[in-house]
Image (cartoon, rainbow, N blue to C red; front, side):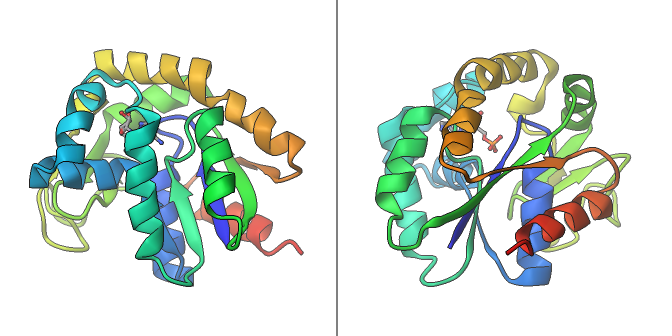
Length: 212
Ligand code: AMP
């Protein structure tokens, strides 16, 4: 089964997906992490994606479909959490066609007010090695600058700078938010309040996932 974790940049998708993977054994697929890995490895996909990501824009759908397809292939029969896909309605349709057999369980919308988002993103630090995310105030790593999970360096992503964040939030409003209507129409939409502590949000998500 596939669960889509949906929300604006900074809504907490990555943090919650990591928790759900650690505590409940879900397999997290983050298309942003996968693209960053391609960039670090200098693959063709990485070369195609880089300029879009640097500008805070969406990478073209055909590139994403290739990335998602190979991530899903390597996930076997695990319960998958999608973090960062779909980001427009064409991608939502493509996902439906791709995962027919596994099926989509829910689209969980982490709903967070836009003024909270900027605060969260500007304090976010990401492990340059494994992609784990932290926040300098709300969820710091145990040792400043060092990832708790793998010991890699935690840094501010280039697209988390203030000017890029504005572009990404505008892209979310214009292109990504309509995906919610898609899942509402399919009866798969579930709203979760994304404000509060990491643990509070985690418990709300678990309560939703436990619904029959
Ligand atoms: P994220 O780590 O999810 O915030 O994604 C970082 C960047 O990767 C986004 O701003 C986009 O440039 C690109 N990206 C990630 N997922 C997608 C997607 N589903 N469609 C298009 N671009 C994406």
